[in-house]
Length: 252
Length: 302
Image 1 (tube, chains in turn red, blue):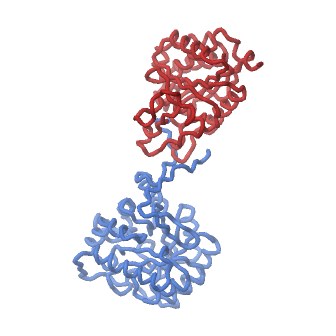
Image 2 (cartoon, chains in turn yellow, orange):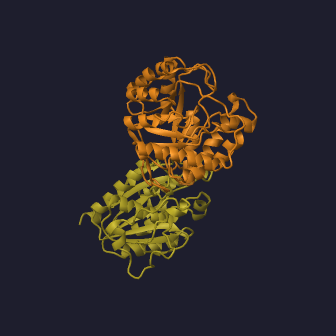
Image 3 (cartoon, chains in turn blue, brown):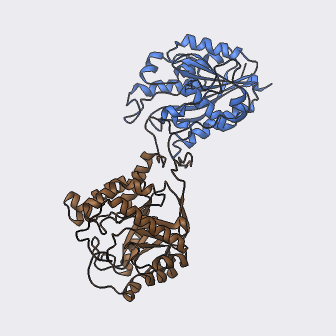
């Protein structure tokens, strides 16, 4: 059962230090942190973090976030976040220091959780970016069933083709696609389930698979009550921060 | 936009702190010293800031452009009309007091070789004595000590102030510069100048031909390796002009090249005419070097 869910984007600029002396998106960061605090307020027993990556898998929470890969080694990772990260690595998981680093999406999730001071245990899962919708739904359903009272943090963002200066240049289809995603994340589960993987790939929408994991996790449960905390494309990439509350769970 | 003060990468080869006036600097900091001439005849500005109000206007401008120090001079370096002590005092002392009043924290340097002038400008608020003629007046270092001022120890090839080099030769100019400047620095410390307030200056063009100044620039790392903070004064000088065969008015880009190279090799203070441009070059070199974090990265981060 889900106590709540939060969707956040995962640009590298949310990792500390990568943007130099200036925090490019303090408002985006603040919206994410507010969302995490709202998740914590529902007192879940477990936090499940899901993000897109090259491959599906589960990840040790103690793995490095790997800011080095985006900075030629000049920006070190923040020291692993106190009790939260150090104490909750899954038993038997891969040992840190073997060259493995978290995928970007999960690294950003871990960073935001540390910044917000998330106190409880975390479970990290990646979903392969090319997973068909049905596979995403199935993973979501499985994760939702896996714990009595779990909160879900979903890392995903929209198209990176929303302007001439966008990372992927301008593609007019980006706006319709992101609008469908926005409707979906604002509670229209059918819209969320209908996001097309091919188009999403063309539009460099990194969040499609993870968002559809959320759609699966929410299926069959009480309807979500969404709170949109941030919406924008300041750098040509579509970012959304949305909290989902579930009445049945929070009424405990 | 909020500022994050993270990751100051102090590669700190030495970690020495330089103290000038009320301010302290890490060895990886790069300081711009703006030239402010109270002279009617200096080679580059040709009297543009001789008048007190024009000189003060120049101070306002260079502070706004990011200067860490001003270097006030009352006597042009090259030969020319005689400027006696009384006239040098008249040009510098009231002006130093005026600058001090306007900018309590600005590091004020005065370019003089005369101990009488040195004492008077220190009393008026100067923090640094820029002895560009290499210890010609032996009492200058005593004044720095007694007034708690910093001292720039320059290699001038042993020439008399305001003379040009004539057929000067060195077996190894860099070795001579290191021997002379570090001896001056140690002497200053022995007289009571604070060790963290002594700089050395190889004295480009002073008692040197262009080959010598180029060699000093090329091997500036050897000066930095002495551990003394290095000041360089290359702005629009003849070795730049002769390298490029350009008149004084067209040496700007060549000067910036010297700033970049000296910064890479470890010089810490830059006595320049063009403050804004020098500040940019120094910031860029420090950023490449990894001693300064980039101001604002967006590329690839969205």
